[in-house]
Image (cartoon, one colour):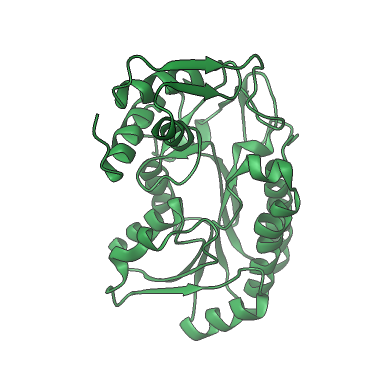
Length: 316
């Protein structure tokens, strides 16, 4: 399969590159490098089935030229703004990095006749709900600009899939962590403590609790379903277990050997406006297809802390 990964130099995208190349695909990556890192894909530089091109997914003509040049058959759309706090300050980021890229990719697919798409969506499109959220029985009420842009993207995909007979696979996943992590609570906590190991300021009171999925578990789910998918299908991809921000803070402090560090919690049950403090998925649909996460949320957190500290050569 000749594939194009938009956002392929990023955290999740680089792991998808590894998996598709291992499967035998020819992989073209386009990334604007706002979030992507050359280090994430440096090990692929000499692979004859891998091509990296720095570029903007909002440039439809550019995408069309790439699709035609490399005869692309499948597009994996992972381009987005992953820093929700940044877009809370400047919502234009979400339009340009998330909603607009989706429109551009779909227009390029329409012009070139590409019929297969994977889209990385998010739990943020649901907003705040009590109980387990199901793909088709839970109202979508995003409260962050990020969630709104992903919801708009799903709407675009739904209409293009119908009008152009595209097989579209949409995964709504929660916080993704693991090797090559570039952002998020674990990344933030460790880097704050590197600057000041005496105390750790936490946004919110620490009771925020969410599922944290290990990136390789997510990649396994993509590879399991991408080639089998027909029509438009949406899946919650996550796990039953959750981890609180308070526990993550303690895990990080312990992992760094900072037993005397003072952890300072805020008063609110959210970290910032637009943050969803608690949620759980109904995972019956994806489980019925034979996929389940290999790591619990807690195991994912501990493994990610250990990996990140090793990657920066941290010594206790």
